[in-house]
Image 1 (cartoon, rainbow, N blue to C red):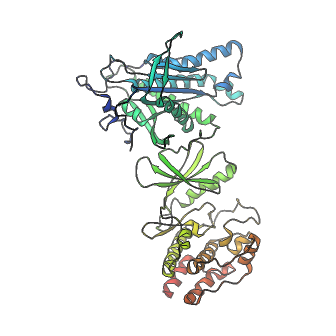
Image 2: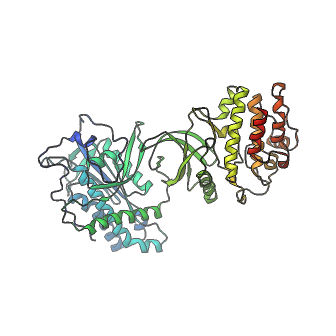
Image 3: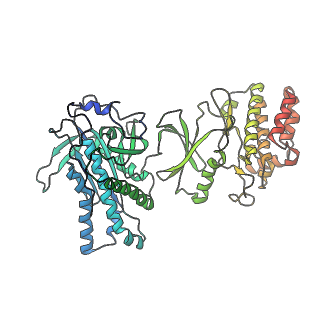
Length: 540
């Protein structure tokens, strides 16, 4: 098995005439990799640790057991021994000491060598992690054909590396030099291996470890994860090594390492069939807390790792109960709204896939929704102000040929400046689309705000949203819903058959507007939100 021979000889990250204290490795003066954004936060400072600072590496070969089940006799023995060499060879050459070994995993401790004027254990551990991935990828490629023929997932490796205080003591009576390793940093390294597997990153290091390793370790994406003590740890994907100026190592060897990391990522994605390891992991976000659950998605408040205002993440499991069609509907929400830039429509920032989940990142509204505002009581002038804004938002989405189909106070959010914005387009559709996600007679929407054509299971257009807006207008002006019933079926019948409700005398001048908005047939309603806004201008 070939492994690039790297030039580690005089690899100094600091001037040889200057001794650098350990604390400098955690500060802003520490070198960072080229083209890498500075993390907003490193790991928690360790003022004067009771235990020495070490770096721990935990690696695990995934789908090892499945591969073993396809073999027997000498072939199985050879495979197990090959895995053992793959997991241990590179790290031992770089000074790592084995703290725990299992057939498919290994834990290494890298400690400070007193002969080194500066600590190098973080650098050695990350170099070892990259080489382990390279060796494991070669192993995976060798065994890929028989595993694929047996219908089994390919082998892939995941490595977590973390620097922190830990107790490392020699073990007695072992054939090879092994140590005991204990401490929080050990458990964090194990946790990061799970993160590496979930995100398909190959090698994941805490941001502090990455900075302590110096400029030759190249990094890519970033993420964060909550720890049991409710703090957050910033994480970094390790992408390869940068050649040292004047290095005797051929540049092609470094390209081999990068290619191995990418190849392992491919194997990891191909073989991934498990949930997200018990942690919500979204690349480039720090998940703060869960704020809602509904429909096919969970909703979380999250902070972008690179800074800026908090955002809302709607997250859906890729392997969830709704299957591929549910995932398509979920991702459609972003596709429909990404091109709309209007103050009365919620802003959508990005969509993506991370750790077995699809997610949409959108604007966060700390003041809540219109439903909460109505419950506190609305001045009629404020209600009309909101009505105009919602109509303007509908005008924008209707001009993009989008029908919301579930307009209600819960889906209208309040910004701090008093502007409201329409959100939650989970059942929205473009008018040009066939409504393939609903069968004949199936109802989509919320019964209290449903248009008659939706109640009857018929195809809808933008005028269905105007009916829902009429129901909301009545509620904002009176504090009550226009129709009440003891069953859903009775409520739907009222939408189809009951007359448009009368407004109280003080709001009577808006009755013609309400009558047109809540007309029983779409043809009797306003033809567009623009026409409604023109009518409101004349009245006011």
